[in-house]
Length: 344
Image (cartoon, rainbow, N blue to C red):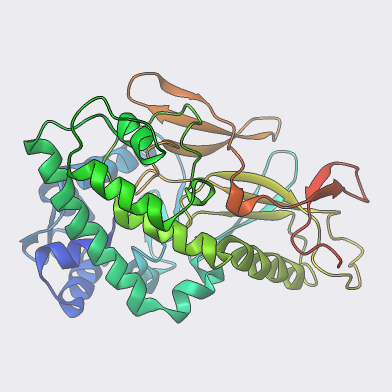
């Protein structure tokens, strides 16, 4: 679903220009020089060591999957968008596509796209997006560096302090920054309610919190969903699609939506639309963790969450203040479906 390796962050951190990174990625994809195998072994792009050991471990894990017989389809996202130039390129066991249609064992046809195509805020404010990315990389690295040098309270205690509790330890830089973020975003604006009980460990990112608050204020989720559902409506005039699987927002989701508007229904279209988001393993919200969609042999679609302590466990995506919509029974099957734009 893309955003596997943040190529733009690599460009900023390594101080290389777009042309250098574009040519280096092209050389790897076209098997010039060392190619993908050399990239996994050395982490070098264009003769420069740009990939971290964690990047190489991910690529190595993907290589093991296709060596074991798995078919891999890579749909690039906006953070690894340079790979979109190589859509249709086949490597052993891996195909790069801009989109795909996945059919479940029970016959559901789901469009697979990264999802930034529906993000009007991203398309209209590309410069702001890149600025936030730079802020994320450099500012958060500084904060986490300070955390490593000073004895600071755990993030869970800091979150409580931001919500009004009295911290047990002296307030450090992280507590001050967290409190500043709390001034800009009310309790309901955070990606996950502070008291949800999920794991709160991980690196602090004020930029991430501010970005989420901004998107909530602008109705970001509703704008994305509106474009997504209208796109599925247009596609169903030519081919049946039961829903979509995407990423991009880094927020795991499994929702059913009513059709937008009261337009003329195509005879073969489904009675409602399924919308799935696989969450994130890259810049994931610490309290959500690393999540993925799984499909059973009977076609049932669920979600799992990975944690270093407990391993892989079933996961039910919570509903959030910024993407909770009124529900009604589906007129076709009676299942509860969300209504994005209710009448009146």
